[in-house]
Amino acid sequence: MFYFDPLYYVLILPSLALALYAQSKVKGTYARYLRVQARSGYTGAKVARELLRRNGVDGVEVEASRGELSDHYDPRSRKIRLSHAVYEGTSLSALGIAAHETGHALQHHEEYVPLHMRSLIVPVAGFGSNLAFPLFFIGIIASVEFLQTLGILLFTAAVVFTVITLPVEYNASGRALTLLADGGFLGREEVDGVRRVLGAAALTYLAATAMALSQLLYLLVMRSRRD
Image (cartoon, rainbow, N blue to C red):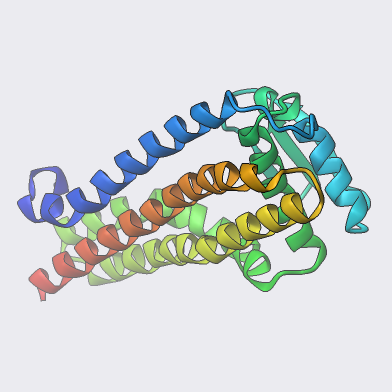
């Protein structure tokens, strides 16, 4: 139904444009600094392991994973998974991403509150993002207010997840820059390159939040039309 509603595109197009720009920006910046090798010669895997050791974090494994830009920290298995170009690479992109994911492991170790909150809401957010729109529009078509309200509530959980993700990601990036610079992994002139890589990645989370908020606004406007 919403695919034929002009209001949907009015509300969504700005955030969609931001998302497309962010995706292009992160890929371009990542590729650019993938070609710039760090003078320290450390690989992403070695950086991650060394940062864990220096910060007294035990029990976290660093392993290679498939795909490009598939890097992540899994708090359930306590594993930092790095793509091949990051795991074995010595580029500024590799070091920045490896340190960023290690930042998440440090957040977990220190019981960083936003990360803990995000972990708690993951099941509800995943459930909500899949069922919110179908339930809402079934409620619209059948004129069942309960289903409309349930759809909005479920999608709100997904929005809260994206909002909480912002401080988690920005904090991890801030930690990464500080750890790399203070730890001697980067020269002063190399910090800006890593900052650009992490900044481009952060823009994708900002775009995801904008998109989620726009969709929630659309649901609320649709609901008000029916009242």
